[in-house]
Amino acid sequence: MEYNVHTLPNGIRLLHVPSASAISHACIIVNSGSRDENESQSGLAHFIEHLVFKRTEKRNTNQILNRLESVGADLNAYTTKEYTCIHASFLHPYLDRTLELFNDIVFHSTFPEEELEKERGVILDEIASYLDQPEEAIYDDFEDLVFAGHSLGRNILGSTESVNKLNRQDISDFMTANYHTDKIVIAVLGNYSLPKAVKIFTKYYSEIPENSHQPSRKAPAIVPVINRVDEKPIMQAHTVIGTQAYSLHHPFKAGLLLLNNLLCGTGMSSILNLQIREKHGIAYSIESGYSPLSDTGIFTVYFGTDKEKVNRALSLIYKEFRKIRENPLTEVQLQKAKNKFIGQIALGEENRIGLIISMAKSLIDYNKIDSLETVFKKIEAVTTKDMATIATEILDEKNLSVLTFYPLG
Image (cartoon, rainbow, N blue to C red; front, side, top):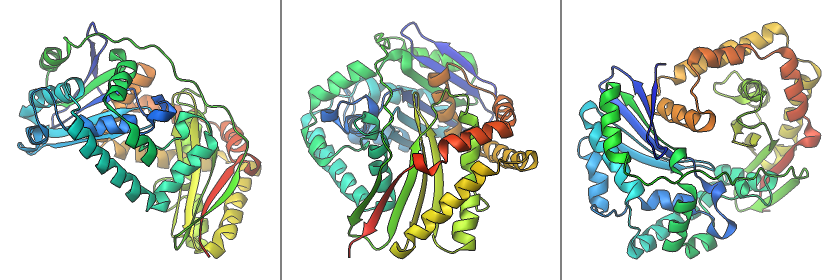
């Protein structure tokens, strides 16, 4: 896909992606997330993401929310371990309005005390609601196992204790330390010429003071394998199996993405879904995931089932892992897996807001954006030998930690 990059003297970059659609999409991504917090600040990056919608130097909450919604646009945001993202979808005429609003809420929020207290209550409710969803909460507890002692292991929402302690000074210090202008990307996908997009972008972002990036992240240590059972007031058992995995920059990243998709990725024809759900009827929900990060990654398999079936499900999963390790994929099997994965990636490009966010992250992580053809070539370059090595390194049950939420009684 065609794209252009324009960089301001302060380091902020514009990613411009032309599209003939009447619907436009834009985002501002900051390369800062929960991993950049210290332990006492847990939940701060997410707290800031909420608070930027509350008050700026010239707008109150209603004015912020109505600035785009009044013209039918959609405005939203999220925080991850490594990013904070604000994004919007809107009709073609409203690019100026959108980029101005992004500027206002990210760089001119005032964080008044009364808004801090109101939003603190909202987030505490969010934490309580999240803890009531064991199929979600177990992932955070599992990450705390495999990234023990590291900020990557902490819940993005923070804890009740940590959120109650956050204050305006924490916000100011965190943004100064982590909102680096050379790690901020404004991305626009729409029917705009490059000169027009650059003109609007420059108008709102050229005066932002430069705050250059000083690398400070440390990779997590490898921790011993843990097998833990936590009793919870729940009806069904929930289990996550997994390990630390390859980073964004590892040569086996494409291979593990492919293996993950083969095991239990998108669709109903994956290996684990066919075996665990369709053949044996053990689990209604089973899925695998691989999330590469800047200096590490995590691979997981999750399932929920009756407590009496947990060990049987684990046994069947490990059996499939052994098959893949001991009987490497043939060329024909591998090509089928590639064809499926490539098709899914191509269809995913139809999600335009997801596409522009992904491209912006790629610009931050790699300082470039691969074309779809290049992505496909990387997948096609994965060999059966690569897959055998990846399976040996990632799917050996001796190296996999297990966390189970088990019903009380």
